Structures are given as structure tokens and as C-alpha cells.
Image (cartoon, rainbow over all chains, first blue to last red; front, top):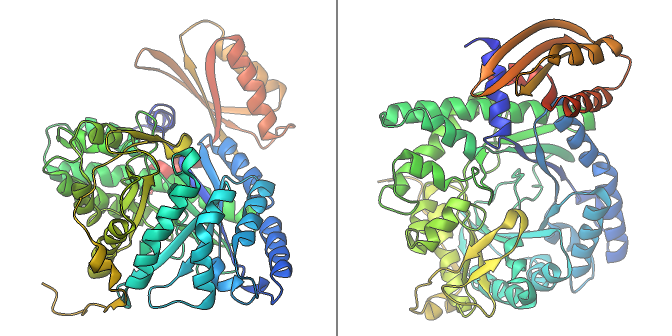
Length: 452
Length: 89
């Protein structure tokens, strides 16, 4: 291929196939901002976030202009607030979320993540206060994202936290009922959460990270689909090769942007997250890749295999293209944020049960799924427990971001707008999980040998 | 710094004249030019060196976009590193 053909290929990817850099996320540690006086602590945190991320948005825009590739989001992740607010005597952490929201507005980022707690093995005082504060925090802020880690492969699952989060999600849905319970779209419950994820709503800046760091998330489902159009009818060997090569090119663009952003901002480069992150736009869908592979719709028999191969090939192609790979890296399967997934749910091809199976092989979990507002808290906790178990046993990150849309039921739709999209409300298993969830305690960590 | 300038649209007279005039006025040195037909569209690709340019990159971009508007062509200027990164190991 001559160099001009390659130039036109890149331009076509950007112009027609929606290749973009999905996010530049600056991770900022707040560990040095703790104070016994909550107000002083928040002032220190605000000052640090704004100082560090002052030029983030402008730098992102300059890089996008220089290379002619869109950089859709500029975001900030901070140290889990439960860790840094615990030193104060505050009995609610809503003011910390409000401080984060102000800092996000001041710096011009569209989301700030880290209203979070890590409770896989138990709660500290700060963790408990944070969890209690989540519903109100998400209802009085616009740009704050919250996440909780309730389990991991080495600790097991904190079933008390799982139980609590069912209630927290319900309360958040109620408090944001005017907007189709949108607060729940900014709340993720993880198992095996990662410390360097640049994607929202689950981004937080882990304690093992440097003081500040630049992580970049790439995207490109449309580019993968277009590449696969050229190998219609060929064997899976060809399909895997094509995805790998495409993922390589996409990731190299991400690596270039990440390096340049880190150097310009004078902040260490962290990782590139190799993700196929869809948007509700036509031509930017992971579900349409499955159709291109030969499935009638996302969710039919064969979808899990298609996703497993896609996820693995994206990683294989991307790993060689980036200096450091991290985050969630793989294919995202959010329902409301993917035009093809939305259609698959509407047509009845895709069920909640199939989505659960797909989460065993994708990069995250039950993501952006609207369920009836009447779903009991215990059933939501049951979903969290199931996902956490899949993550714990399989050594992978799993997550639940479901939205029990207050006042709406199966067959209706929730409309969030923008990148969060539209979600048809899905059917939930009507049988009770109540007594199971009421037990509480911890599910012990699994054995790491005798794997069969 | 090397850039790639791409001009895409319906073929017509004066494309090279208009674009190269703007480049010349701003001290941009053209290194190579190629033309091709991509699907139904005409595409001209220029490699250029902007080290001697007297205006900031963003301004050149705006000026070329203006030229693009006047001749109804889509004009892009991109740092060549993006193409190297994506297509070379």
C-alpha cells in the first residue's frame, strides 16, 4: 500500500467510520489533601484539582487540531473520596461531591470520577458515610461519577456492601426521578476494579498511582465493522487477523495522543485503554460488529463467542501498539450507549440473561441497562452478586450499572440524552432474591488452583 | 515539522493554484503532491514542511479552511506523525 493510500485510509476512518480518541483522563491523587477540618480538606482538594487540570481541556483541543483526530472527552479521576474524607469529622460527604462538581466546571471537563470507596473486604467509617451520601451526591451534582468496589478475586465478595448497593441504587433512582433516574447512570458497582481506568462512570485514581497521570481511552467500533466488511464470508482466522490489525492502528493513534498530552502537561503517561467504546450514533456500534460477523442480531445464539473473539483480538492488536496498556481494555457492551444494542433489545433479540453471559467474556459487565422502577432492591443486589461472582472466579473486572427507572416499566424507554443515550426497559426475573441477599457477610475468596 | 494537507471534493480547476498560493504566502514549503480519485471524489494530498512558517499552526488551518470554503472543497492539515503512527511499526 503506498503512503497516499494509507493517508486516505486514516482520513476515511476519522471521517466516515467515527475513529476518535474517546477520552483523555487526568488522574489526580488527593492523598495529600486530607484534613481533620472537612472544609479545609475540600479547599485543598479543589485547589489541587484545578491547578493540575487547568490546561487539560485546552491541551486536548490543541492535540485534536494538530493531528486532525477528534478527542471527544476530557475528564478527571481522583483518589476514592472515602479514603481522603475519612480524616474529617464530617457525617455526610455530599459537600465533597459538590466540590468535585465545581472543580469539573472550572476546568471544563464533562465528568469527574472518584466519589468512590473500596469495600471488597469491609467498611471503614469513611466508606460507610460515602455510601450513605451517594444518592444525594448524585442528585445535586451534574458531572460527578461514583463507583464502589464490592469484591475481588483475592478477597471474595462483601455481601453486606452488595446488599447496601441495591438500596443505594434504588434511592438514587428515586432522587433523580425527574430525569428518568439518570443518577444511576453515573454509579458503577465493581468487582476487581482497576486503578487506572480512564472511562466513566467507573474511573478513580488508585492509591498505587503517581501524584498525577494521563490515561487515554481509544475507541473505534465503526472502524472494526468497516474492516470486517472487507472479509465477508471468510473464516474466523481472517476475522481475528483483521480485528487485530485494525486494533493496532486505532491504538497507535491513542498512544501518540497520550504521549503528547503527557509531555505537554508535564504529567507522567500512564496507560492506553484499548476499548471499543460505542456511542448512540449510527456507525459507532459494537452490536453491528456481531451482525457483520454473521449474526442476525446481537443477543442471538453465537453472540458470546463473537464477543469473546472480538475482545481477545482487540487486546492482541492493541497490546503491541501501546507502550503501556491498562484500564478495562476490551469491548464495552453498554445497552443505552450503543444504537445496535438498543435495537436488539427493542426487537427482543437481546435479554438480560444473555447480557450476563456476555459479561463473562467482555471487558466490563451489565452496563447502562434500564430496568423497571419497581424492581426490588434485593433483585438489584442479586444482579450485583452474580456479576461480582463472574469477576471473582474468572479474574476479571466486572461491573453493574443498572438504572431502575422510577415510574416506568417493561416496554417503556428511558431517555438520558447525549453519550448516555436511550434505554428500552428490560424484563427482570420476577422471583425473589430477598432472603439470599438478607444473609449478608462475605462470600469467601475462591481457590486459585484446581482450575477446571 | 512536516504536515499532510488533504483536499477532498469534486474535481475542478484551480485547486492546486489556490492551495499552493496560501501555502506560499505563509512560508510553507511543498515537498510532494499527489492526486487520486477516491470513490467519486477527487483527492489531492500534499506533503509540506512548515518549519519556516511565520504563523501559528491553528492559523494556517483556519486560512486553508477558508480557501476550502471558497472552492467548495474539504481541506485538512494534519501533523504527519498520526499517519506514521498508525501505519508503520
